[in-house]
Amino acid sequence: MTIRTATAADAAVLAELARRTFYDTFASTNDANDMALHLQSAYGVDQQTREITNREMTTLIVEEGGSAIAYAQLRSDHVPDCVSGPDPVELWRFYVDSSWHGRGVAQSLMERVKAMARQRGARSLWLGVWERNDRARAFYAKCGFVDVGEHIFLFGTDPQTDRVMVASL
Ligand SMILES: CC(C)(COP(=O)(O)OP(=O)(O)OC[C@H]1O[C@@H](n2cnc3c(N)ncnc32)[C@H](O)[C@@H]1OP(=O)(O)O)[C@@H](O)C(=O)NCCC(=O)NCCS
Image (cartoon, rainbow, N blue to C red):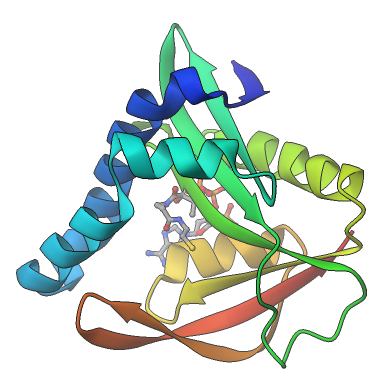
């Protein structure tokens, strides 16, 4: 398994992986129209190219046997009021292909994410996770994140409550 920083050449692979993992995670618990709206606005080669080449973001890709199996994105953008730790950076997206859940890929990727965040000068790592995403919340708690509040994530037309979690770096 290798973990590396994505380049613009990875945009098509990332778009497919990101779209598929988002759908797999949330389709069964959400409205199909909201899902379609979100997929259309969030994923596509142009969109992922912009993200990969944005200097305020870092995209990591995990590969195994020549296939992309997980990715994570860090972003320096807004910071919610409930995040009070020093020098925060956002873990914006963190997705592992379902066939690799529970097999240590997520732990390895999280270690690399934290190292990358430190390299960017961050001392706190924050994220928003859907209040109903129990597995992700349990995973983040295992990785040292604590719940500090909430914010709203607009999923299609549906305003959903995300728990905001923070880890010290
Ligand atoms: C979230 C994610 C990265 C975690 O990786 P993982 O390999 O599944 O994580 P782990 O198996 O090491 O840890 C998950 C923990 O949740 C627990 N868990 C599993 N299913 C659960 C459930 N339905 N409810 C609550 N906890 C659950 C597991 O038991 C495990 O804890 P344990 O190791 O103490 O037993 C991965 O599941 C994933 O990519 N999910 C889909 C995308 C996603 O939700 N991303 C986060 C968006 S914010």
